[in-house]
Image (cartoon, rainbow, N blue to C red):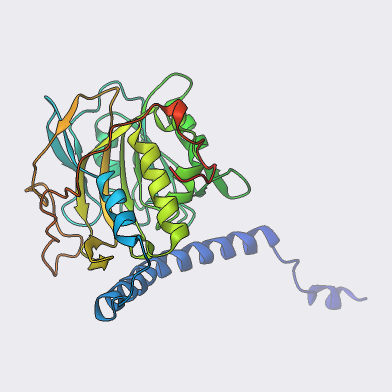
Length: 320
């Protein structure tokens, strides 16, 4: 081979650069598909309004009411509420209490981190987990980002909710949890031991998929998770995401997606509340339409929390 022939040989491909480029393209694709997936769910939910189930399964109404009773709002004595994050989608209403908290968890951030920024400005470290983006849209010295998906168990590309809480709270600390992971919250919460969840002073989460409650497996899972949380937490705020419609389940008006704030009973003195939702602190997720009206969101007497020792183990699959 001559020197001239050698000069025409193609350069060796940079495999690392190609892999990095593919990962960046995948992250951009996930970010682009996120609003499309939300729109598809919205269309699915609206179909439920146009074509409600004429004959519901026996017992669906009672199953829905049992779930609704576990979400009955309460009031924390001596503690007010504030909006954390922006007006509109991405902001949440929670208790104005950040004391005795070591860090915050933000699970599912996409391109919206106004809640994270508000919390970080209060001096808390914010651990962020989201496998659909390469990083937060803006930087803050208190942000700690990992491109990992939240799941029931840790593995390649996945971190268990229990492990994420342990990372935030440390050995003996406490954390605030914010979670919007597009329906994956139910399995993650179901698999997380109650003592680990109890290390959170507040849990602020968007709960998805209530339109699937006619399915027995779904209603069992949702009830089991909420019953487990009820042992340690009380609901102090509820807001319906108006991107999804009002639905009717067993002739009970309900909502496809709820933003719920839970407060730890060990940290806050909770009592019954007659508050009407939405409140002045709330804001429609979709600014083009009015907020959903929930009233007092009272489906009957609030069940008494039972001893954790008397409940099934988290993720056991036993109905609560």
